[in-house]
Length: 321
Image 1 (tube, rainbow, N blue to C red):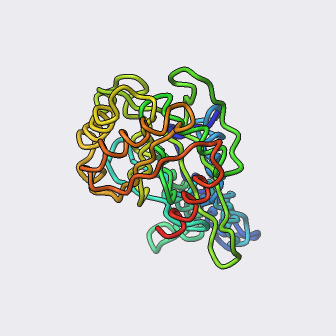
Image 2: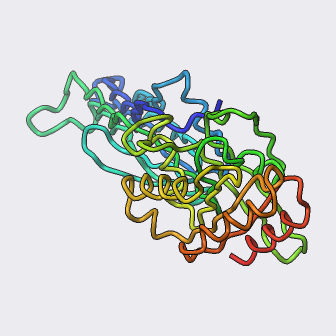
């Protein structure tokens, strides 16, 4: 199961305590300062399953700094803690409302600073107190309660009503192996696939298959709005409409309305309409669907997973976009 949302608590390391110590033969204090607690960083990765580690563990803390030593020696600073997050993760501080976003692999963000080490009695000495008998304990690291939400950064997003053929199409276009069946909501979580150009000059393209939306999805019906976020960053939407539907225009409007209710920016994205499952209907039915969808003024392409020529045309179209 792919984890795309999590709530965790992170904390910087506690600063090490200062040392209470004295030179021999009454030469005064020599206790050193404690080491600094470790900082907590988030770093990006292209591995979109990286949030899976948060399914069980919810608390992460950097190491504490080491205690100060005699002879004015400071304790060692603790190592920083680096937590790997997938590219496309939105991080929100649940208390302060601060937000960060991981946009690139290897990107590194400082989220929680470790506490400073406490002063030893050598640094606490003064003209009034030449032999302090105490040292500072060190400061705690910063602590945050965070929400993590993954929004895929894909080239294309497959959307449509349940059972519109999205997963089957993803399997044919890419190396994905998504479960398919002839009933709604076979896909219960988003899936990704990558397909390569026919020539070495093009780069691989990433396609996201978003679980089927239904009327009312933007307000939580069906699988709800949980998956709509995954197409917020997709530059091109592939809107799948089943050719065997009794009303393809209605199906189209239902999804468009849900996109608009969720975010007006979604309906502004470039959209290619795919009339799927053309092998299940007559050529006349396919032509009727194309005629009905013509007023959308969008590129409409009839496809079937059993039609090699249609799939090749689709791939060619995608690489041009």
